[in-house]
Image 1 (cartoon, one colour):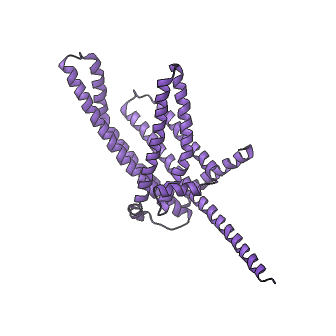
Image 2: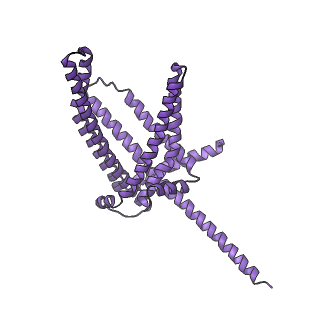
Image 3: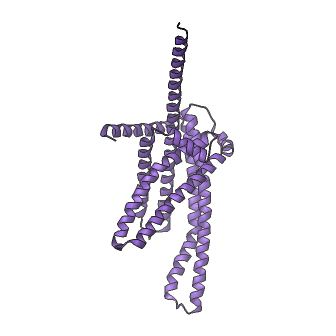
Length: 319
């Protein structure tokens, strides 16, 4: 890609981001309602989970500190060890519940936000109170598609861990393994941004059309041709934004008071959620751009067919 082409792609990315931003200003009541309400739900789930697991984390830390100071042959060591595993099981169970509830909320958030973005883009009128019915009606497609995407993503990163284990086993210089792992992680993360083009677009298709699962993934791969450079840069932009938020989270002093950690985590969860939702709005805009390109191509092919038929008919009329 030469410099001029790259600049054109960057301009297209900026145009898509600007058009997505305008959707929120075009129908403020609808767009901000479907963004703020799921955001509040996510924050409430996070707060409830953080407060619920705080005693479990405290007990885990306490038991893990007591184990090294206890004689392994004494009965107290077995008691502390059993308490540690019990607290750990309870912590994992609470974490699973939190992940399940958050996943359901995120799926419903994606559903209503993509529908709201599509309706706003097409200037269709719709009431916010009708969205619960809409959610219950169209939940199956996004659920099936997200299941396939999760499978592909797990398989992709499972391959990454297989390569990492192979590097550790067969590496002769262990001091260079860390650098190789970081370089490989960057490579896998960048390539996942390319794969996520089809994954994200298939989610939009499964919501706005009666197509889901493998069919939605196949259709996304078909209609996205010509848009991949722009969407790849978009994914890199949102990926770097999320990575920056994670790096800020690493700067937190975890020895601070619990309210400080709780507030920081709340801001982080909210920021990541907003970034993800805005990314899906940009993919909704891209979906309509892809369909416009297909419609224009169909019209062009129709004109060519009409011209060819007219020429044949005219020649058939000549002596």
